[in-house]
Length: 330
Length: 248
Image (cartoon, rainbow over all chains, first blue to last red; front, side, top):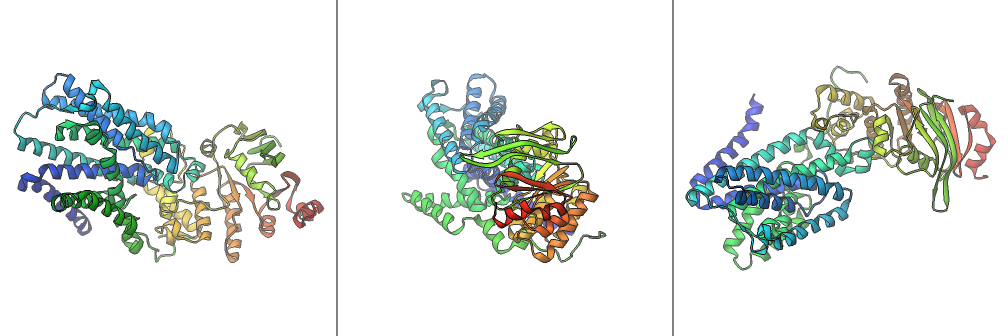
């Protein structure tokens, strides 16, 4: 009882803060909503990049697919705002997952650097195609429908949605990592040939992991398109140089292959980035670049990875004093 | 010997101009411990790799429980109940021993949703019992990569047992293990064979170990089958002695 209270207390504190914050600081709602988007980015990247060890630079592709699909449904279906949004997000999510399954069948056969390079092409190709496809607005982009209500309600509405998706993502991944799925993708990360030699269906696990990632990214894409209001193919939807790289950095900063690492990394990264933008205007990109270099040099394992090296007992890695189990003979 | 668990018939494998295995035939009857010996480079590990489907064979047939398996892939063969351990030990080094054991459960899952299954207390109990059997119980929460080579070797052995194979192929199980622990390991291998009913095919360089362990031994030299028979006969076989002393 005492133990469970102590475990739930930090979660409860976080819940109070994230619910009170947009009400107390209405001017920062969009920034705070973007923080949740960053958390989703880092968490979903970590499924494949951290837990499974397949470094992907193409995850932003699923984000863009979800965003465009949702906006096209909203534009063409003739539904009212909220129904259109719901249907759009659902279809965008489904399309992102289908894309992940189809592309995964080809790309997930590659390993190591080859996979990273293959996925890098994915985001770039998608941006170029989107920028020349008239049906989705080509280079001029797409404008999402106007929110029925004032701007304050709009930002609050999207803050709640982003928060809910981030929370669902976090708990879904926590559930997945605790079971067979989590250990299987960890095994693939540590030694894929061994996993195969032990009979694991590695292709199936890899494809599903990639689809889980795409599921939440596609969903988020639909929301972000509407939150931003304007979809640019290169700078918003398939923004490989910003979102695509950031999701990798945030996961690495916090500690890839851990559940909380990407969350912590996203929070630190997003807040520092906003501070740079405020106080170092003109130099914010330079400062961001320096931050990235510092992360890679001093925290190659990330914050949680660094902590685990120094305090393994905090993570439960300890020798048990008992030589044998209770009530068992050797 | 029809009806053997594993039948290897005239298997050949060449790498470029090097013939690693030439027309090798051997039988592993159910419930037995069979040894595979030979000087370095005689093709023992190549034969193992051929059997478990790691690379295609050039000629011959390999049957497991009467079923032709030489065209199946590694993971398919593993799911049939034939597992191998590696000469250079391979465990999942960033995961704890207990996690290594959990993910080594038999992977004969049929439905898609079994991929997301939880681990029951019975699974953990069995994992802990096997860790205790190999003397790793106290280290079950340590990361596998933080343990010594010998301990990783024992963990790999425990993982293989967790997967409940019918046939276990062990590639030099005692290499790198503290000599004082080797007797214990032989004892455990015999118990696994007798109590759990797991058939063993063992590559081993340590003659004392293999003579104590195996009921039947095959000896390879230069990729060819040199001799086979019970340990006493192999020990006294002049061709085997010559091969090991380099006369061949």
